[in-house]
Length: 338
Image (cartoon, rainbow, N blue to C red; front, side, top):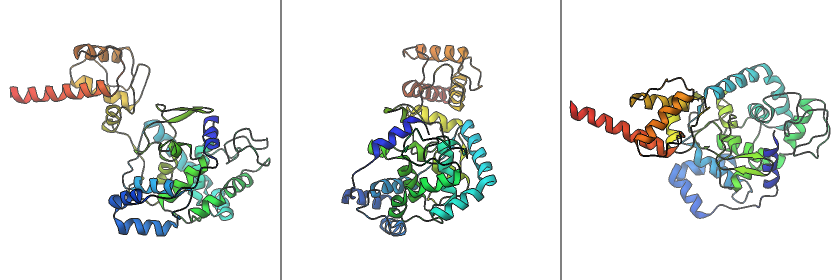
């Protein structure tokens, strides 16, 4: 795990215990209905005065509307994770038996920390057999992954007990809360959704620790979060379909419209392909290949000049809105002519 995530953990250490307000509880009841929320809370056993109750409640609120939509690179990463789980599940099951943490959750944590590298500490992804550098670094030196993993997870016994989790737990919000607490509550304390949990799904849009102690509101975590990873191996129950799927051009364009993604020269992605498709529909000379090269730059700047926008060649929410308006106008004009 890189240093920026360790800084996140340090910032979150010692978070104050909080209780849930009546207003928050009412909001949750409005979202899910009283009987549903009472059932979920009773199943999770998360006390209202628990340090994790607000975190858990946030995940309950998100649970009904999670859309997992991944880039091509993220989908390849998920496929590799699935293959990794199939090959090594016995090792995760063995650690689960000693820690009472679900084996698929352990595998997802391991993937986030070190892409499943068994030569690293589960604590933070540092190399085995050496003194840990990143936090937590006040741990014994381990030479075997299983021993280090058991130690790392047993450091979180309090979290496990507060969330009433055992190795058979499948409840999505409880597993999401555990994963967020494992990584640290820095994002929660900033009022942000944790990419460690949600990257690649709709609750997460942006925000990332890009260096030790440095948080960027606009940076986007390109790793796949724990919840989509669990969904890929049927490791969590949710009101939403947690099965990962590849992002469509429509999904990608929606993110550009919302200002979640800025498109600029040098990028190569489904976001760029969606942009190119829209520009081509409007009659601009551009290839739909996903590559934001000089040709796409010229087409964007030409469109921006036609619309009276600053021709900087960068496509964000404002340019995307003008593209949509131009398409609507073109469609309306076509209907009128007919």
